[in-house]
Image (tube, rainbow, N blue to C red; front, side):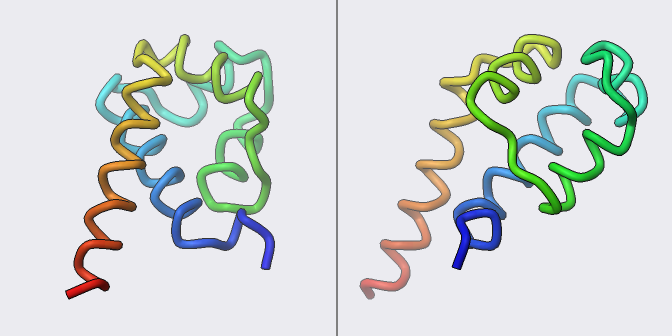
Amino acid sequence: MKSVFSYEYEIFRRCMIAARKEAQLTQATLAKFLKKPQSFVAKYENGERRLDVIEFLLVTRIIGISPCEILRKIEQEVSNISCKEDT
């Protein structure tokens, strides 16, 4: 199974969507800042394509969130799930 279909990647996608919405940006507006078509944002948010590290850093910079904060949120959610499974 590719990581794009893993539960962890689902958490990543949800965090990225939440961060974009918190920044009050539409997919179209974010895409414009990225100089990409709106479908670029839609595809990584829908899990149709992956973001590479450089793209991730660029998106977080435009959204105005620290990449470390996104990674912390992902780690926290993954840890919470792991703890629930262990009980």
